[in-house]
Amino acid sequence: MSKHTAKLSHRTFLTPLDAEKRTLHLEISLSGSISYLPGDSIALDVENSPHRVEKWLKKFSKNPHEIVVNRRTQEELPLYSYLKKQVNLQSIQDGDLSRARPLMPRFYSIASSQSLYPNQMHLLVTLEEFLDEEGQKMMGVGSEYLFSELGLNDSVQFKLYPNEQFRLPHPTVPLIMVGPGTGLAPFKAFLEERMYQNAPAKSWLLFGERNRKSHFYYEDFLTGLERSGQLELSLAFSRDGDQKVYVQDRLKEQKEKLFNYLDEGAVIYICGDAKMMAKGVTETLEMLYSEKTSKDLDEAKEWLRRLKAEGRLKLDVY
Image 1 (cartoon, helix red, strand yellow):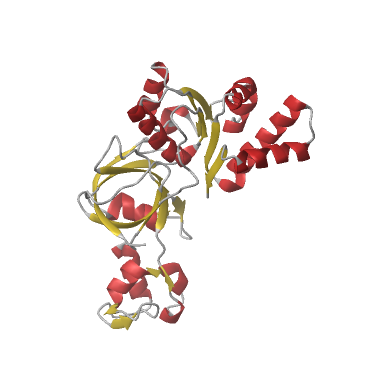
Image 2 (tube, one colour):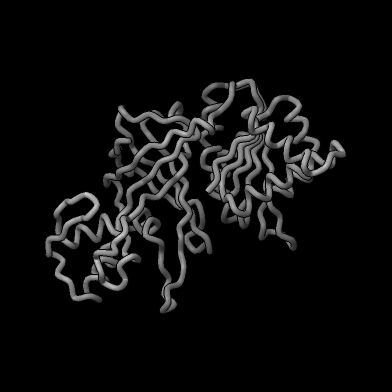
């Protein structure tokens, strides 16, 4: 799979600058040879910041100009470049370069339809921020690269990963999309594509985050679609009320709508956290089916397996 080169053309916060959890919208300008479809993702190359590299060099009294060999590729290059672009610095905190593991790319679902944005690719990125052992605020390597190291019009490299298992159905087929947090990304692309198609089928999005004021990503776009009748929108902001509310709670509240959609042939899409969210949503679907049909949980699980086999339940989780 070959790498593509493109340029970062726009970067903006979708959250307040002082939000506890900060999220970026990125736009990447593409050359004419790069094509993608809604549902696809990319593996984006990132780099260690100069600060991280210089801290490591100083800690182990290493010469940044020393020529080293990448043992995986046999490439010879200066130590500084090797550390900046190719090494997971956490793997060599004892100073032993023979232990170096590769700096891995970061995976992102594409948040745009190329039908509407022929020369662009949009990404929805939450910054990983934490306190280090000294109590200083730090960012993850990928977050720091995208937020502060990568300048506008700088080149980025990525591999495109088509996702044939997460494609839009025919424009006449209704959609149920469950995408809290950055799991919203492919569904923004889906909705843009359906706008372009002037699709007649209904679309229902269940989106959740911490609070509406700070974390309602693409609010104007989504509420605009809702006002125009192109989207049914169910929101779950976990920290806005006395009790935490999640997308699966909205499914429970609107179970009649859920089964009406399914009776009309809808496809359910789930994107986001695998461990908690997707597990919670699939268990809720099983429970609601069991309640509706008076069948036991094993039969409900079999129903969900049938939906998957028929291509009517699709997951993109991580």
